[in-house]
Image (cartoon, rainbow, N blue to C red; front, side, top):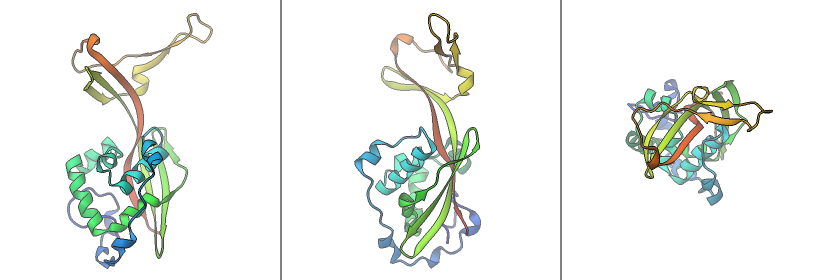
Length: 214
């Protein structure tokens, strides 16, 4: 059994497991419907922690929020797989048509994230539904970024090295008290009088999603 249909497209799961899609009963379509996420779950979507990102992906999958699904993937994953928002929409439709049980990821039980490195974690999960069950892993990577808005519109955005642009000036015993300072290299000049928002962030995104054979 495989999550990914044969042929071109982003390889969300191991290539070696793609042989048995034809064995999925057509009647599984109805069995793979999942409950819609609650309004509270949709409000709480975000990427501030690995667990929140996984929950956001589950909510997006259950509610068919394709844009939110796409936002859950890391930049490294998108580049590696040649994934754009348009190609994800097309591939997702094909994937769910070939293997509707993929929707069951939305109801999976997931474990506490395991740290692999300072900027990478592994989340293990399991789907159990009627006669069907499988294990999977989600590998997430931390992405540091900035976004600059001019007159209400996003003008610049890019990845950053967090420790390279943020620092604390002063000591705890100083007066005035310590302050947090930031310095951003810009690819083009901006007029500070027209700036409307500056965002510095650290988000956790999905870099790999794979089935685990038992």
